[in-house]
Image (cartoon, rainbow, N blue to C red; front, side):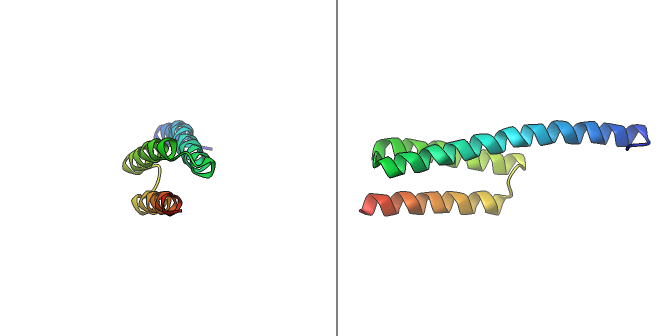
Length: 89
């Protein structure tokens, strides 16, 4: 347990930040999942829109510090590769 005022405040802040980060992570996972579903359905227009939205949210999560910048970049790269691979077929 926190014993000083500053430690108590840090504990409160970490709880708030963890909740906010969890919400952002959930949103990113949902958008990536919707992109992959559109890709498996074969709907290229829907997949392209979902790719744009997922990419944007991944970059926003990286700039907010929820994801590491290289992690977000790697995920975006893999999504684009998956989209291009499906478009080639």
